[in-house]
Image (tube, rainbow, N blue to C red; front, side, top):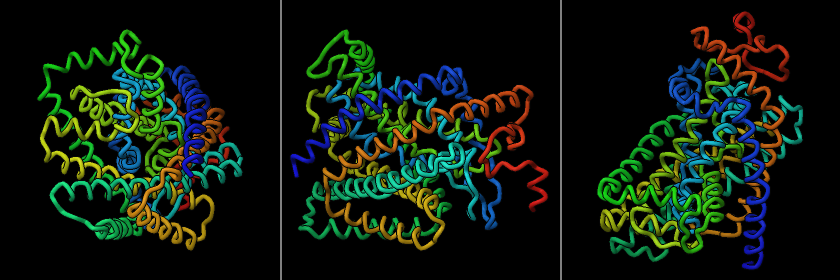
Length: 482
C-alpha cells in the first residue's frame, strides 16, 4: 500500500508540474491579454458588484445574492490548505515561494473571471433560484454532454466526498489535540463522539437547502477570515521591527539572489505557484458552481465578484499565514513541517493558549469547506439527474463520509483526490479555452453599458448569436411568462 501511495504522489507531482500548472498559466496569461487585465483594472468594480440585490425565486423565497454566492465559494476555497499548505510551500521553497504565490494569484484571476462569467451565462433555473457550473457550460455552450458528465462525476467524488472527509478529519484531529493539551484523555471515545456531533451539525445545514448553506457561509466566512487576519496583524505588530527584513527576504529569494536549504529559485517558483493554485482554485472549475447560483443583472458582475474571491484567498488569508510563519524565523527543507510551522509560530508569539485559538480557526475554515464542497457536489448531481431520490442519497452519503473522515484517515485516498482534481482541472480548462470568446463579448457589453452611465443589465437578445442560453430572457418575454 505504501508503494502504491508513493507511486501516486510521484504521478501527481509530474502531472501537476508539467501539465496542469503550465496549461493554466498559459491560458491565464492569454485571458489577461485578451481582457486587458480585467482582474486588475476592474478591482473597484468587483467591490461594487458585490452589493447587488437578489430576485425572488420560483418558490417565493429570495434567490442567492451575489455576496452569498461569493461566501459559498470562499467557504470551499478557504480551508486548512491556507494554514498548512502555505507553510509547506515556505518550508520547501523558502520565503521566495510567497512572491510566486502572489504572482500566480494575480494571473489566474483572469481564468476565474472567465469560468464564473460563463457559469452565470449558462446557468439554469431551479425552485430556489439558479444552479450551474462547468458541467452546464460544457453542455449548453459546447454541446458536449459527455464532457459535462465526466466533469460532474469527478467533482462530486473529489469535492463532495474525498475533500469533505479530509476536512472532517482535520477538525477532529485539531479538537483532540486541543483537548489533550488541557490534560483530557480521550481513550478512543472522543473521536467518534466528535464525529457524530459533526455529522449532526452538517445534516442540520445541508438538509436546509442551498439557502441555509448560503446563510451560514455569509455569517461564518467573514468572521473566520477576519479573525485569522486580525491574528496575523497582531503578530506583525509584535514583530514590526523584523517586518522590513521579511519583506526583503521574500523578494530576494523570489529571484534567486539568495539561496537556502532546498529553497532555490526553482523550488520557490514551483512551491509558490502550486500551493497558490491549490488554495485559490482559480481555473479548476470548482468556484463557478457557487458563482452560478447568484441572482445578478449581468453575468460579468458575478465573474468579477468571484475573481475578488481569489484575492481574498491568496493576498489576504494565505499572506497572513506567510507572515505568521516568516516572522518566527522558521527552518526550511522539511516537507512534513507545514502545519507545525504555523502552530509553532503562533505559540512562540502568543503563548500556549494560541493552540486553542488555532483549533477554533481550523474548526471554522474546515467546517465551512465541508459545506462548500457539499454544494459543489449537489449542483453536479442535479446536472446528472433530476430524480430527487439520488440527491437525497448523495446527502446521506456525504454524512457517512463526514463520520468516516472524522474517525480515520487515508493518505492514499487524499493523493488519489489530487489526481482526480487534476483531471477535473484539465477538462474545465479545455472547455473555457474556446468559450473564453463568449466571456469577452459579455465583458465588452458590460463595459459599453458602464460607459453610458448605466447599471449593466444583460438579456440574451443583446447577443443573439449565442445559443444554449436558458435564462436571461428579454424583459418582454419575462413579463409574458409571468
